[in-house]
Length: 190
Length: 388
Image (cartoon, rainbow over all chains, first blue to last red; front, side, top):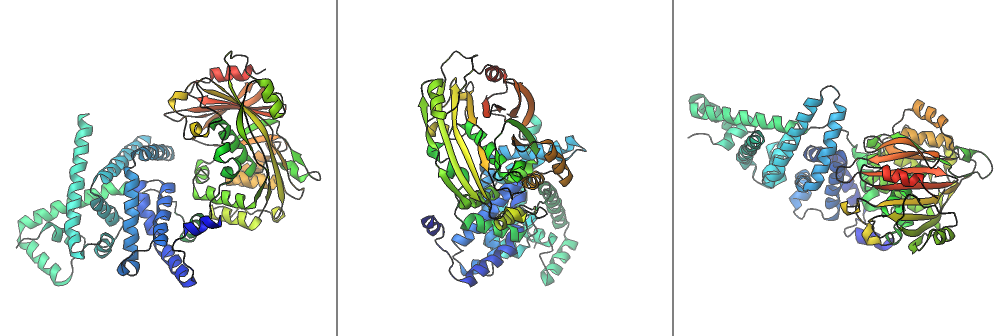
């Protein structure tokens, strides 16, 4: 077991101050990172797993750029987290299983209107499919903007100039709308 | 000079300020074309916000300190799940048997043994089986691979000492040979004339020393800090002995002694495989200071019952002799069946690609399970009823 432990912690922090720093960063950023992932994957257990994985990456291999380590730690975490979340969405099989579960859950919990619950579930599935298929950076931008990040934070998370966010966002929204219309068309013609 | 889409988008988000904003406003006031584009972009942004809003779920949030505790336990601790330790891959029994043993192990972690409080060193052996429906969300948290399950396994593996390692599964030629190896009279279904694949496997014993503080911290983390473990359990030594069991595979079953064929979930090729497992009741020894009824009620509360429900349910079960199988609501269905002259349960997991079932009962101190794939359980029931 001791060998295991040594292997698991290549960057094991020996000193207390580094540990305290990590703990503080974890406590500060856990909630928004987890929430963004929950939006993305829609499953509490998976969102938690992915959030833990995000912080594990921070622990194991802290960002190489000093700016990311300090001023932009939140942005770095968002980038890693949304990448992990989008990858998870693309893992098709798991997605189907999760959606089935999430769908059942949604239908079971909404006793008042099962038809509405089913329609909502279709909508969720459709939105997640589009996000999974879109260019990853566009999808990240949409999900993070919707998570409430200001342009400066979005720019930090995606590592682009703050002045370009408006343009990128408008483009991503156009792309999302195009894909959504296509899907609607497909569904209607089926 | 017209405003571009990016400027309009930022304008709508109040992300343009000062002189730039004033300039944009002035231009918009004068330019119908830009106003039209602004409205178009605003409408699109609104509709996309509405689409993304459906992704909101009711937040069952994990508090940051609890998450950090999980992170440390899970990532920085060593991970040796108990089941892995006891039933290491080399000794992995058939998936049905494994499921049964897992159920057994789970039921033992919810100490179902009221009589522990009686006698000097009370011993428990099961003579019947019952099921209790548990909250699936709780069960999900405890599911294989979940951080909580890993921590529980971790805690158990730290406090568990194997006193007898399970034997590797081995093939035997006849029921007689199986009976000799396992030390009890093995029964085979008379309804089948084909020769089963017979294996003898397992047989393990371990001791566990309870660390109350650690167990309580896991309960707290699981959001059940209202459940307070009694002080009397701290340091209690619990001895568990799991006898050797026998598995008989009928039809196209995986090779029961071959680890690689048992990995992963059973496929469609095994659709007509039915596995009969028989294992004498495990025995559990615990000191009389352990207030087991109290623990059982805590366990029931943990799996989703109210305090009153747990108390009421605890009264209905003879904990000295009953194997309590927790069944997650929604994930599995169960119904009582009369089988082999006693009452047992048919438990079904209605999975889409491969529904699973297991019929489980206890007779003369032996736990029997007949399990397989598919939704038709008639052949399995016929087999269960024809054991000789």
